[in-house]
Length: 285
Image 1 (cartoon, rainbow, N blue to C red):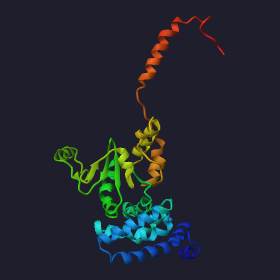
Image 2 (image 1 turned 45 degrees about the vertical axis):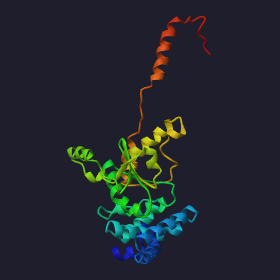
Image 3 (image 1 turned 90 degrees about the vertical axis):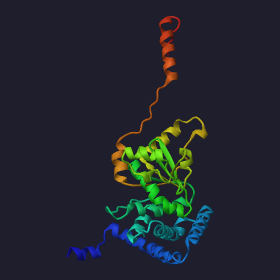
Image 4 (image 1 turned 60 degrees about the horizontal axis):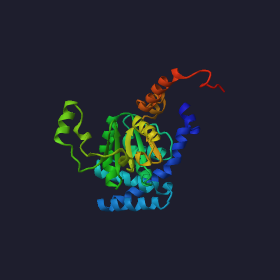
């Protein structure tokens, strides 16, 4: 009886998913055309798509082609093909909504589709992860897809910033230091050091909420435009949204530095104040 009622009265999630099925069908249809192209043909198509978007073509109109292109690039670089459920999750994320996916359904791969779509605008996409480990891992892992399609990828971690470069190899000394820390060499292979300003100019940037947040605060303390790192904020994809926007949001981001100039002023006031005459030198208003 309950199953029968569910077929009649569908829940909101089911209705929302059914509305996306026509878009999914278009993505699957476009994929068939792309499989016939060689690697250079895919890259040319991606460049052509980027020019169309930068010329003002709406993202909704290019979504099926863009998603199909990411799926094809993932097959050729990672030997992984997005499942239909991942495509549906990517569509939801591209619309600025929350997509809930079960553990093991491939959230990291699903996020590549909306990241690429909005990355075509050239305005910059932030992918917010929960720790530096994931930020570096996903940059190296998913960066292969974006690089194949002609986009620039960056990564922000504590006190360091990198650009994805498939030709970059970590030095031997760096390898020794990381071995002592029991970390993975792959993190710094393909991650070329760059300034934070350079990383923020990339089409897609991976980092933690703390890195993005503190960079925002530092920019608001800058006195000159050339000292700014971030550019105008555009689009972000947040992993573990409940953790970052609820749990992590309870901890404020605070930048504190010693104020040497203020200390000098206080000492001067402390020196002068005892010499003041309350009758002549002080006026209350």
